[in-house]
Image 1 (cartoon, helix red, strand yellow):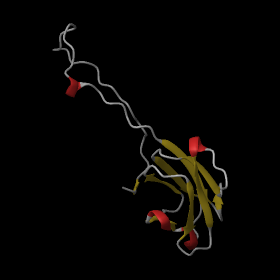
Image 2 (cartoon, rainbow, N blue to C red):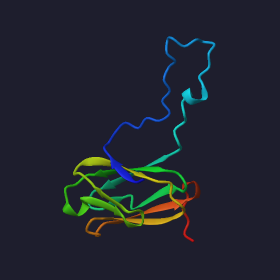
Image 3 (cartoon, one colour):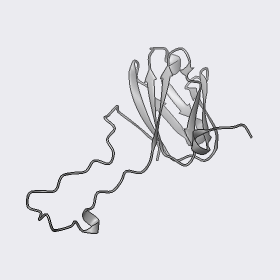
Image 4 (tube, rainbow, N blue to C red):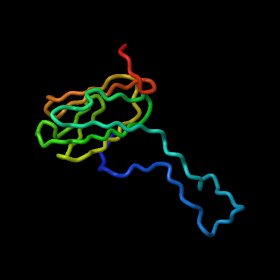
Length: 133
């Protein structure tokens, strides 16, 4: 599922301390053990008259949080579209918006503003290294 979310602290793999009532000899059952957060990657994109960087390189097969910082008030940059992924996200002026992307296969995914005047590319490759076919 692809969804925008408000800027929040990114915390993963937090482990709670055992309660005072638990015995030092007892071990948690399988259902009580903390689960590791799935691996993910984070990418930054700035919008200010253009996209910076214009090519965002990502590792294939890993979910991504794309943090978009819109540093302008132009109508053109009010939205970010990634057509191949069905993403259309409103970008508030002078704020960050985080977009959760699923694990993507190797390839190039164009992104544009709502008016299709600004262009950029998500370049997805093995281990974050993209090479043209």
